Image (tube, rainbow, N blue to C red; front, side, top):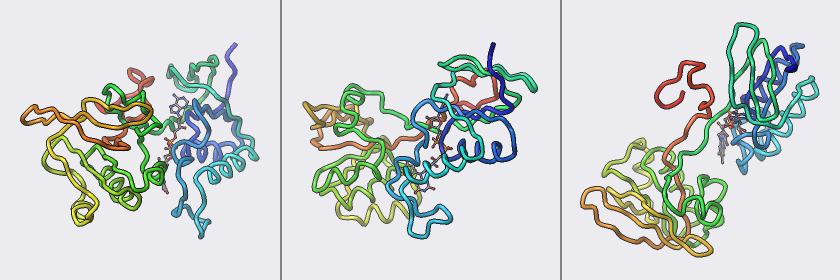
Length: 257
Ligand SMILES: Cc1cc2nc3c(=O)[nH]c(=O)nc-3n(C[C@H](O)[C@H](O)[C@H](O)COP(=O)(O)OP(=O)(O)OC[C@H]3O[C@@H](n4cnc5c(N)ncnc54)[C@H](O)[C@@H]3O)c2cc1C
């Protein structure tokens, strides 16, 4: 028989942990389910400077460990597993997971986001060997190297500016000839002598041997194919909410929000 809780929280990032802390402290029986490692995206942050109470900043990993400890001190139960389905019924929701089914009077969805991928050959193969989705995490590995940033929004330009502190050259590859990023970021990026732009181009393949060596590019206007030598590529083309299992259960827009 499925075990019952008053509340189930899906996702163990800062949002899920905070929900778990408040509800456990309020005296509810609460199970938090996390499919990877508790902490979510912030666990990758080298230093978090904007969390109240830490005037000198704190590493993301340390921060989530503290929040988890605080929540567990108030009785939060955590479980490792992926939520794969939800059957919604007022006061009696069935939560299906890779570890079995659970019943909860209420469910809080705090599954966060994942990075959108290029979906081209070589991307998965060279992940962690030149392909990255996190400039803050991996930028220092590319000191004095040539890197590419894919995208044209705020994230792409923030990544390019952060990478230019380490890399010798940062090539921003954008599928259009205009950026979506804010004017302030555009101004900073255009003024940075280490940042160059490659317009109207998409990556069709990530090439390499042990590590990334080149990107195969296709010009979206002329169709011309070219090879660009790089040591690393940072993909910054957006985020996807982790809500696939909620399709048909909750109203979602076309982007999954
Ligand atoms: C490198 C980096 C540095 C950052 N630095 C800062 C900073 O300095 N300051 C700041 O304010 N923000 C920072 N951020 C942003 C911050 O990390 C996010 O805003 C925050 O983590 C969002 O929290 P969340 O709990 O909503 O989602 P997430 O952190 O995305 O956590 C969601 C969790 O839910 C889990 N999950 C998803 N689906 C399921 C499922 N079906 N079953 C079970 N578990 C599931 C995921 O595995 C994940 O652990 C940074 C982000 C990154 C990547």
